[in-house]
Structure formats: C-alpha cells, structure tokens
Image (cartoon, rainbow, N blue to C red; front, side, top):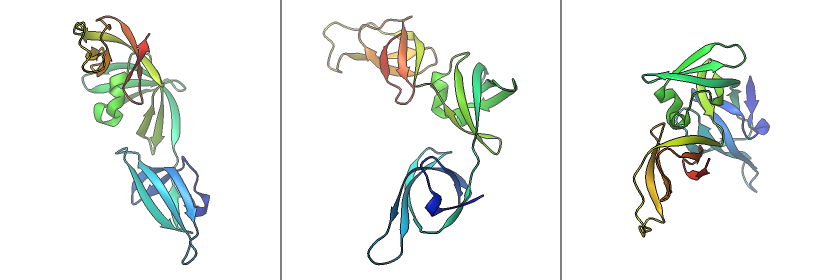
Length: 186
C-alpha cells in the first residue's frame, strides 16, 4: 500500500530504498518561498540508528505491515534462542545477532512482544524492567566512593552493570531494559 507524506504519523513503518524504517518524528514545513517539504527522523529497524531525512511534499512510499506476536522465551541452545508463540504455540528460533542486546535480559518464561515484517523478526519489545540474579560481585570496599559508590556486578545472563557497593552475589536486582542500568533490589 502506498502512503503519501501528507499521511505520515509517528510509528508508521515504511520501506525506503529496500530498508525498513519507522517514523520517530515528522514535521510538515511550508517555507515562504519554494515548495512544501516534510522533515523526518527515521529509525532503521535492522541497525537501530536514527537518521534525519527530508522529503518533498507529495512523495509516496510503500507502507510496511508489521505483525506483532506475543512470545514467551523458553530456552537457549548454543547461540540459538527459542521462543513459543503464545497464540499458536509454534516454536520460533532466533540467533543472537537477530535479538541484539535483548539477550542480556532473557530469562526462561519471560513474555515479550515480537514485531515481524515478511515473516522476519525486526524488533523485540521487552518489559521495562527485569529481575536478574547477581552471579558475581566483588566485595565493596568501605570508603571506596571514587566512582560514586558503585561497582561492576555480573548478572546471571552475563550482563555487567554498575550497582551500589552493598550488592552481593546471589541477590536479585531490578534492571532497566532500555538503559541497562540498576534500578533497585527486587
């Protein structure tokens, strides 16, 4: 389906030059001289980068259909991550490159949303925070506040984050999946 620049809305997926983009921001501009144009910020779904792009008013693009599925992470075998579609109960498998940084937050039975375009995974929406156990934490030294009172800790998924000095091995922590930062104890 073709979509014109006059129909742009935040969140619409477009195929431009063979790549999938999602409109993050857009602004219709009508200068005093010259023709109108649309200034946008587009997020490349594959790479994740946001680029500014300007289009002439009236340009047409192919609108991409994004299918959303509720998934449950079941297990990992080597570098292949297995999910179950909660509606059809089909098993879906993805490699580590397709999932990107989301692998740092995946625990068994975690429910996520997957965005698919032409049968391929293009995005994984995680909960805002996840609870992860501390696999390894060096003891915090009293008076060692040169780094703002934090130390690196390794979580059960292999993710290393900065946490307060009082955190010990075995504790459960809340971690923000958007920033990868310590939120609090679970």
